[in-house]
Image (cartoon, rainbow, N blue to C red; front, side, top):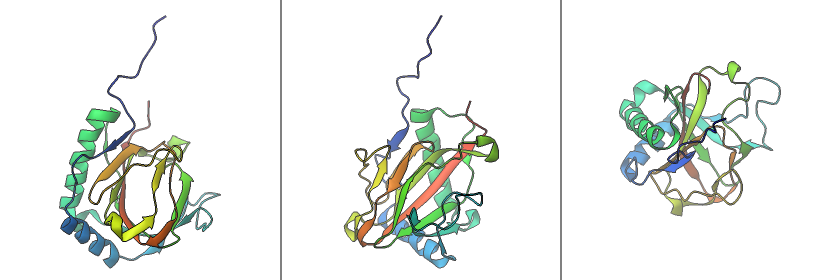
Length: 194
């Protein structure tokens, strides 16, 4: 009997060493996100347990159309492909959904969750990699820490940097206690995980 091991290089979280966007580019994304129709963020989808739930999530979102910021999408896609090659090793990765511009005002949060459906047959394409890119200067807000797996894993994101992580990893955004945390969230995927 032979044992199978994950390759040594494989990991399920990666922070960019260099910023993907300059402060000016971050502001351009903020301006675009704020110019679009805002909506109160929901949890899950339209099935039971989904919808507005202020006990699980309080944040405002808008969706950035692909055609309105093609350079932004290209930069993020190129970085995702590099991160996937160096860390995840998932097959057939592509952008599968529009970018979500997200604002967490004072008191805003998102409780523990994962980004893909446990029944992947209901979700083609399947989300495999999630990304959070911090658009705000960390000096502009307090609280709002992104935590992964448990409260001990808190990536220290700087403005313009992105965290890529496997969409099946449990994560949350703690309540913002001061200011307004702005971020860009995206998902990448394809066929179901094998």
